[in-house]
Image: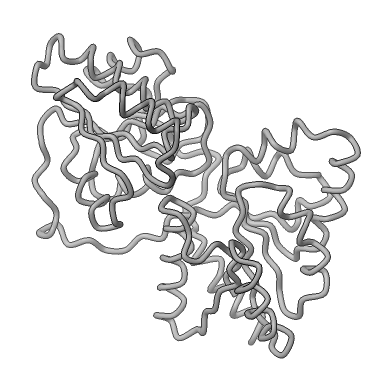
Length: 314
């Protein structure tokens, strides 16, 4: 049972959930959804779970959801797994008031396993849960034939942003490419926006409206995102915080050079930079420190799910 918004918003969590479902179904497992975005659909799905032992995967980015649904997960038959996707989880845990921290400590006992996408998230959880915590990669690789990928375009950079939210720093990417254009007049930026077209994205769109070297796309399909990454010479990830970004993993998988902020663990091969426009631009031109992948996993959420199903039913 996949506990997640279904269909979910375009983005890394939804991509992880859908790719995981495809892998499990391909391996012959039955997969159903409890749509956490719709109470009505969720209640319909719950009528099924009481009659069979299941592996329950509860995908969240906000820890309060783990508290709210913990009474239900205490009593579900089978194995329950809380999957913590967002790099913001650590911040959410650290800023809690003492009473809420105590409630969270108790609530997390409801989950047999807790899968986190980085060691930073795991380290922020209560020590008594260490034996239940596993670090997993949310990226489920799928082979993409090289012949199907578009040609790479010189001096094309790409950046992704969820709804134009400030911590994705898409405006910083614009500033970086503006600096690069002093020496590379043909440098261009492709902003891959997704999820809501709200006020933050409207402000970003207005900022780049007169820049003919910036393209902004909204909610491209999975194949279109793969093609955009393959076309780009560099994928920028100048986020103020992060988990184990699915789109970073995907860019690496199609051979695109990735330059990311050094605020969190990054996959092996990613070039690291500070969050200044000058430093990022210099890294694009000269290369930067290369991450060794420490703090992240090579074992994927699909690997862990398949192993859990074997343990549960064999």
